[in-house]
Length: 236
Image (cartoon, rainbow, N blue to C red):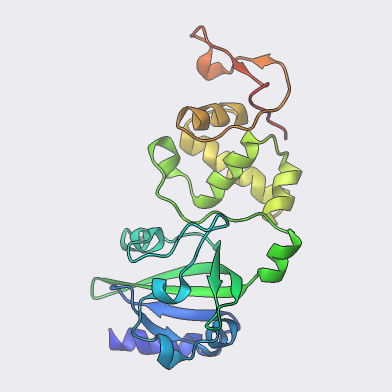
């Protein structure tokens, strides 16, 4: 275990991104120079303290994301890794700063270690140039099989976004969006984008209202109910 900590610390010491390594108990084991530059804390001020105490991340509405039992640590213990997401933290001086966090997970002697790589995206956020990636959550029902990115895509589908619009908002290629759509359709066991949105709405996910004609997707044709595009819009 000591060897793992040493290897990680050496590998991350010169990284351009801020980097911190968290032990199984949520305490910080390593803090690199870039992290000190971004948040103002020196390594000797952070090592041994709880990660959630230092980052104290919040979402755009001010709700606390970081906690001892946060979703990132829960996923890591289950052998999964959260996709990158944005949090609002504060520097040592109290200045608010938006961070984009990526997560790496490693196991040693049956124990889970998490590495956060983070960069300051405050300027980008203030310019409104990118969509806000959602903090990791613990989904339920059919959506539990989807990755964070796939859930972002299906929510954009519900809002009527086209493939090109989704690619621009998520800052990826249209081919990548089409791949995400195909993967989520396969996972949900549906055959169209509309059916995916219908399934999402039935499990408590918001559907954005738009104008359109009444449709009856194949998954619902045996019943009396119809699905109206006055509630749902799907565009390629």
